[in-house]
Every structure is written in C-alpha cells, then in structure tokens.
Image (cartoon, rainbow, N blue to C red; front, side, top):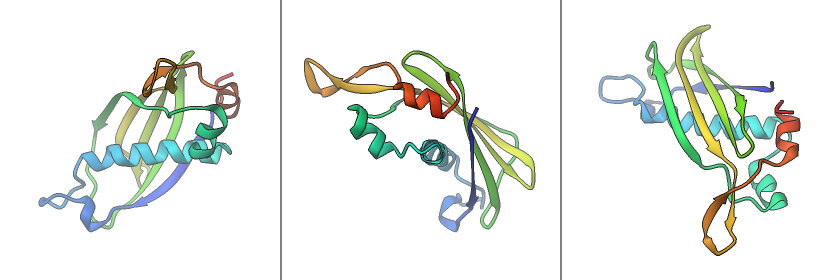
Length: 139
C-alpha cells in the first residue's frame, strides 16, 4: 500500500482558547492529506477528475480517535494510506504523530462520484478508475 507523509506545523490559528488544536482542524488536515496521497501517486485530483469525468470522492463517513493533544508550534507528522477498497468506495487511514508518538488516528470513507445521468446537478456512485487502484495499491 502507498503511504504519503507530510509535516504539519501547528499555527496559532489552529488552536482553541485552551491553546490546543481545535478538533475540526484535524479533519481539514485529513482531507488535505488525502489529496497529498493522490498527488504523491502521480494522480493530482483536479487532473484525475477531468480525465475520468469524476465529480470527486465525497465523504460518506469521517472518524477520529484522540490519544493526545497538540498545541501551537508543534511539528506533526501526518501519514495517509488507503486501507480498504470497494468497487466504488475506499477508506483512508490517517495518523498524526509528534516525535513518533501517536496523537490522532482517523479514517475517511469516500465514494467515487460522477455526474448523475438524469440530473447533472446531482452525483451518482461509480466504479473507482483502475489507475487509482493500480497507483495506490488496490489491485
């Protein structure tokens, strides 16, 4: 399985009045890390969407388990990998670590979406393009 890694420096604006990261920011970092995972595999999302007629990979579910906190100035290592494949869905696991210690583990369940054939303003689930599974370890 392909794993992407990136470093996040916690900014002052990422924190709540108690000085720790405000939890919704982790979900924003998860989303950005999913995009980095695809880009690292040579599949920048805007290009992938255009070339395969996709509307995107919207979320069906997002979860996080917190075992520690982080604060302004912390350097976090963020890992992302696809851990489960379906025909039309995939699950991305995210791990955020500080100095090797796991602080947050999360997941996103995403679906491959195309324009709905009866109403292009809507979306419809579709099979994941083969190149995605090939490049990200799903085949």
